[in-house]
Amino acid sequence: HRHLLGIEGLTAAELTTLLDMADEAVAVSRQVEKKRATLRGRTQINLFFEPSTRTQSSFEIAGKRLGADVMNMSVASSSVKKGETLIDTAMTLNAMRPDIIVVRHAQAGAVQLLSQKVACSVVNAGDGAHEHPTQALLDALTIRRNKGRIEGLIVAVCGDILHSRVARSNILALQCLGARVRCVAPTTLLPPAIERFGVEAHTDMKSGLKDADIIMMLRLQRERMSGSFIPSSKEYFRYWGLDEEKLAFARPDALVMHPGPMNRGVEISSEVADGGRSLIREQVEMGVAVRMAVLEAVAQHLPDY
Ligand code: CP
Image 1 (cartoon, rainbow, N blue to C red):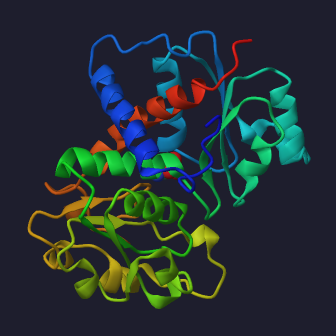
Image 2 (image 1 turned 30 degrees about the vertical axis):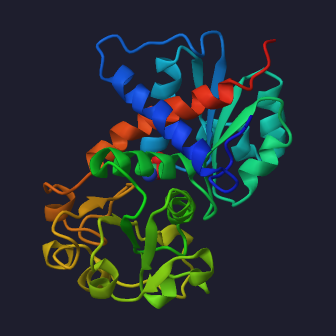
């Protein structure tokens, strides 16, 4: 595929190939000399209309590790602030002949729209509540490396599923790779008819975490909420926050994940986030490797100018 717009539409074989490539990128990244020439001469633009720490920096490091020239477009000081549209911004950057544009945008569907207007490859770094495919890939890689497999595992995705592109991409990727996915959240934060995605829905942590191999906590996305349900942090943590007490509902060897950024004391306690069963730091390392794999994969479809 020339673009990576979402997990939707990818086969289990394609996902597995990307994870295998990412495993190799982990090995490269752990060497003293990390630089490769796969993307030498290529130009990568990171175009982030929403804030990011992990995704933007890891795409930059990944591109540089593969030898690309990487430019981080500073949207805050760009002509977007003067009213330039998404498409005009994309066409302007396209005229500079980039090979890959990595895009994050607050609107679901914006990245796909942009991909139709430019000549280069486009990679989705998160679009509204739609998809965040590289997050799902790095989560799958982290799980596979720690559990040795994905097929047959019970993964409990907990928290603000309604507003979460991470949840959506993870549900698609993990089910495609054979995991059983549960969504655990208050009713108000579960998308309507969530069962149509083939997941089990739970509204209490005790039943939701029972026998779980992996617990994936999500951030409460207050910026995407409007009035209807904004719980107090204290109340949310009491019923839905992962602490040692609730972690005991899961399997004794269950591992804990969080895509970041974390709200400590809201969806997860510091004790659990920093504890021996947390994979949160490893997820960040896998983020660079997965993005190297994705950049390499889309680069295979770039024309030789
Ligand atoms: N997980 C994630 O997408 O983090 P950032 O928003 O910091 O990129």
